[in-house]
Structure formats: C-alpha cells, structure tokens
Amino acid sequence: MKPVRIKIFCPACQYEEEYTHPMIECPACGHTYLNARYEIEGDLPWPEALKGRPGTMWRFRELLPLHNDVNIVSMGEGGTPLIHSQNLGAMLGLKHLYIKDERQGPTGSFKDRQASLAISTMREMGINEAVIASTGNVAIAYSAYAARAGIKLWAFIISSVPPEKMREVTIYGTELIKVTGTYNQVKQVAARFAKSKGLFVDRGIRSIAAKESMKTIAFEIAEQLGEIYGPSPGGAPWRTPDWYIQAVSGGLGPVGIMKAFRELEAFGLSEGLPKLGNIQSSGCDPMVRSFHAGEEEASPILNPQTRIATVATDVPGIAYKLLRQDVLEHGGAFESVSDEEAYRALKTIARLEGLSVEPATALAFAGLFKLVRQKAIDPDEIVVINCTGHTFPVEKHILGGDLGRDVDVRPAARADIPREGLLTALEAVDRNINRVLVIEDDPAAAQLMKRILRAHGVKEVFQASDGRAGLEMVRRTRPDLIVLDLMMPGVDGFGVLDRLKKDQALSNVPVIVVTAKDLTAEERRRLSTQVEGLLQKGSFIDETVLEDLLNRLG
Ligand SMILES: *Cc1c(COP(=O)(O)O)cnc(C)c1O
Ligand SMILES: [Zn+2]
Image (cartoon, rainbow, N blue to C red; front, side):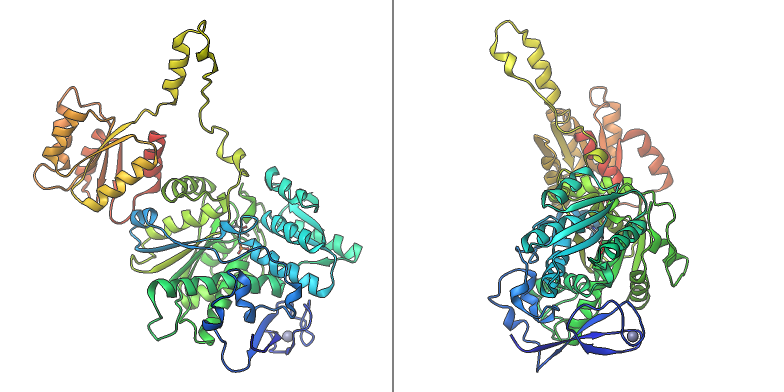
C-alpha cells in the first residue's frame, strides 16, 4: 500500500492537523463536526491495487482512517452485491434500477460497516469499554464487533425497538438500557451516563470513523456500475449513479456516500455526484418538513409517531444542513411516506424481487414508488437504492401473526377420524385462484405478468395474444381470474369485457385490466363497473392495486 497521510480537517475554519486520534472538537474554533482528509504520494492506486484484495470494505483501505491494520476488526462486512431489479424495474418503467443489498452484512444491516471501522478505531485507541445510543441496528452491529474485540459495550436504545432486536443486542453480552423517550433524549441519557462513568461515547455522525465507513458503500457502487456500464463519459474508470436513494434517520449514510463520490471525483475514479433521494417516515420526518419549509436548520419533531423505530431520529442536527445543500446543488428530493405505505412496499419487493427487508428499508422503496409517480426520475437514469437491512423475524408485531396456514394430517392415519375433516383442512390451504388467463399482445408484458403470477403460487397461467383468442380461451379454460390488456388488435379489451359480461357463464370471472392507455372519464366509468382492478402499464403499476392483486392471490 502507498503511504497515505490522514489529516483531520475543520470545515468551519479550515484548521488541519495530522489525524492521530479522534477529536471531539476543533482546537482552533471549537466546531464539533470534523472531517478526515487523505494525502497520497502520487496517484491513488485504484482500481489496479484493488485486484486480489479480499472482498470486504477493507479493500478501500487507503481512504479509511485507521493507522495500523492489526487493529482491524472484521468479519466480512461490505462487498455486497448490486442487484439489477428486473421485475420491480419493469413495473416502475426504470431500466437501470439497482438494489445495493446491504442486508448481506454479518448482522444484517449496513451498520456493520460502521461497526467494523468504529470498533477498530476504539481498539486502536486502547478503549475497552464504550457507550452508544441507537435506534436498534447500531446496537446490534456494534455489539457483535465489540464482542470480537473484547470491548464492553453499554447500549442505550429507544424503548420502541422490537424485542427481537433487543434479544440480538443482549446475546453478544452488551448491557442494554431501554429509554422511554425520543431518540434525542436517549442520546442525552447515554452521554450523561458515559460522562458519569468516565467512558468513551460514540458520537454518531460526528464520529469520523462512522462517516468514513459509509463511503465504502459508494466506492463499491461506483466500481460495480463501472463493471456494468464501462467507464464514465469523461474516461474515469468507474461510474456515479444518477440517483442514490435511502431511508434516512440521522443521515449518516447519505452524508458518507456524498463524501465518497466527492473523493472519487477528486481522485479521477468517477464523475459527478448523484441526486439524493432522502426518504423518511411521515410519522417522523424532520428533514422532509424542514426542506419543504425552506429551513436551513431542521426543526425537531416533538412527538414522533412512526412505528418504525429504526428511523425515529427526531432531531437530525448537522446532517440535514449538508444533505439540504447537496440536494439544492445537485438535485434530488426529500420525501416522506407513511408506515402503511412502507409495509405495502415491503411485501411488494419480497414478492417481486425475493428480498425480505425491514420496514425502515421498505420506506426507501415506498419513496422510490412516490418519486416515480411524481416523474422525478427519468426512465433512463441509473438509480441505486440502498437495501439497508434485513427483516429477520423482528417486526411481526407490525406485520401480523397471520403466517401461513396449518394443516394437521396426523388424524388421517386413523380410521375413526371422519374424512371430511382432512379434506376441509386441505381445501383451506388451496389458494382460491389457481388458473389465470393473461390476454395481452405484448410478449414482454405477458411474460412479466406470468412470472409474477407464478411467483404467487398460481398453478396454471394461460396466455392469449388477442381478444378473439382470449374469449375462446376463457370458455375453454374457465380461469379464476383474467388479466386483460385494453389495447389489442381485432377485438380490444373493451370488446372482450362486453362479451364476457353478456355471457351468463362467464360474467362472474373477476377481471383485472392492465393498460398503457390514457383513459377518458367515460372509459374509466365504464371499467369501474366491469373490472376488479386497473393497473397502469408501461409507466407505473400503482402498488396499491398490485397489493390488491397479490392479496387476492394470497
Ligand atoms: C440506520 C438505518 C437507516 C437510516 O440510516 P442513516 O443514514 O443513519 O439515516 C435506514 N435503514 C436501516 C435498516 C438502518 O439501520
Ligand atoms: Zn475549526
């Protein structure tokens, strides 16, 4: 590795000194938000030097603020896949939608990167007991890494953190303190406790280690996009996406991400900065409210209402100012979505992409749906969404306990049990909708619908590519549901509907219309009496309708 000098830099007064240990404030002006800066002899030897290094976030060692490798506490964090979203992308009309799958960290969230660098830094400083405040995932990740490093941890968490997450924290041996109050109050209690005991307290976004760790997500994204799309237009080997979208609580993620893209640009590795999509829960959205009110400083949310504890930061502090500046200068958005929208999105992405995420992560997806609906995102833009955390079993109190159906087949072996009991039980397991007919002339759209239906357990999916063939097939196959395109050659969707509704034997088959057509009020009125659902194709399939469809299938 080339010699790198790490400087600590004060953005308020430009004071700079050699980075020897984490500082709480600028010695010159007292500012408490400091940055790391890297001076490298010659060029940064990326991408060449990265080849052959282990696939963790520590590959990007040159731009991480740790002095001695012996202090690294690592268990494979980073190096997560960038997954091209095919089904969701097709539904949203986005060709270049990518999911950065941060669920695949050792404790299931992107906080693993933060924990790895923060705990390594603590080890380098000789700290063996520390205090943190958390909305859940930092406590889990730090606990795991602290355990490996032999550091005793005190975790102060907001009491609304799901019990399953608390269990994770305590299993590593961490002392867990549940505080009833807002997250800002939790932080104050933790700081007071640390002070009274003379212990080191992690400073979240004001900690250099925390912020620097997040950069590795952006380094990987740029490198992965470079592999997919080739060099940037100006010749830099990697690529910056057009959008980076994340569910935001304290804002550490996007702040670190933007610092990384700035560094990549400065070192000639990629070009430009992404537009940030900062998504919050409408029950606790101080950044979104303040941004739309034109405020330079975020106003706190006095009474947070979200059930998603992970993102319950009521007082966002410095991150808001930085992110607001980025959005004003480089584009992007601050949006909020409701918890319910997040739960719906959670199911949609699980069913369409095979990704089970925690509700906080689902907020980002619900926010993406909203941005697409607002036409804020161009269909040709490269969009990366951070899939920040795995659901594990944690949120079942929110998602409901209605998980699967039970069938007890033991009595079947005994002659004295009436047969009806078993048959009835088995029937209940059977889905109501087993046969679906897709009447659609566009082969790609038909293919997508078929894939989705099959993914949801529909046993038989038939397809017809025009109205006449469709009607004939309805009579022949007697489907439980028809998915119908409106614009087809010959007999179009309206024609199909008219004929179906006139035929007594077929008039009760539910129909879902999928269309790319801009409907007139008259057409809408007509459809509303004839169909069960309406999906807008090509641009965006409204997720509530999709959810309706999925529920009907489930
Ligand atoms: C921490 C966290 C967030 C919010 O991240 P910040 O960048 O700190 O605002 C979102 N999702 C999950 C799963 C998290 O753990
Ligand atoms: Zn200063």
